Image 1 (cartoon, rainbow, N blue to C red):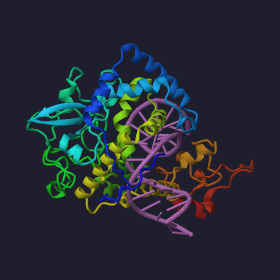
Image 2 (cartoon, rainbow, N blue to C red):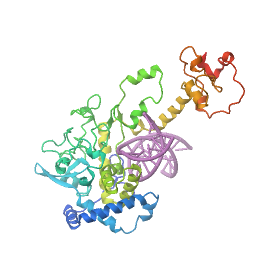
Image 3 (cartoon, helix red, strand yellow):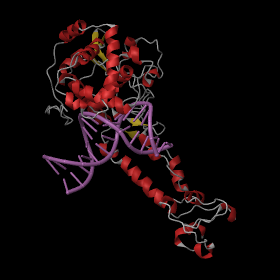
Image 4 (cartoon, protein in one colour):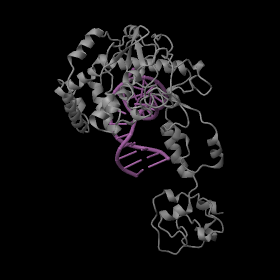
Length: 414
DNA sequence: ACTCCTTTGAAGCTC
DNA sequence: GAGCTTCAAAGGAGT
């Protein structure tokens, strides 16, 4: 893993490398020079399918690291250059739009002043992916012009419009999906705030952007995401908890994406289209290898983006810490496990577990009353036998419950 | 419905 | 400070 050495000047404390990038003209020359045919694309696609199969063997990427690029990689790299950044003129200023990250449409002076590579190919092959990747087909007219899709109309830079294309899930869930984020405004500078994400003071009480679209880092309770179902009952909750559940949940602020995550988000659609793969795990393996195959200059761009993401995130949520979400997953799991030990069980379920007749059999292990023998619906069983391995049931006839009901393991029947 | 898988990097935690 | 753990995205597969 090519760890970039500490830049030293990172006010966020990230180890971002500041690299002197090549001249833009030089890059563009490269793009033209490396144009290739449709047939090349077809070859590439088939080779990538193979790549995905190979990728299942761990360590393959590591083994290949440092080797001379194969012809396929050569084609692939130059294809990326072909699909490279779009330049659009806005108000006399050229902006570099990074597809998948229209929010990263940066004025070139900014790019030059912030050590961003002026022209790095990041453009997913939308022609081939738009119809296959679910992120792209969301809310997006298929005939939509890509150049218009990536850029904002003049005068709208810095605005979020729901009608704009968004690709995939936004980097911060809560924004319309599609992953395309608002552009940085042309007034953006390395030290300024980011109009894409206005200062936290501009956010409403619920973290809403003035446009009505919540900030992407804020995950509304309704959003389908992990932390949401953390907050949902995974089992029948007591009334108190159920009541608590009705109260509005605090939106979850997620971690800013790191460089690799930004890269993945952008390149995923492309890989899916090229490899006809859908499994994220396999795709991520490919992306991981491609990430390693990137030059340091190419990677540096993503490190820079990630640094800005963190910077912006910190500006928007000064009190937020990664600690806020730290351990939630594990904590939930633990709580769930704990609950399963204290949570009242069902006599029916309990008997089913032990292969007893639901209508007539008393549950040997926990002595739950069968429904047909109880005057009213049986109360939940507090015994924990149904979560333990089934005991070996003896053939000894079960004793009637007068004594059994006082047994502490079946408190619910008292 | 929920978890796992799989990747890298940032940040938190533990010792 | 080193080393480990967790979370961020994604979506199919498995439970």
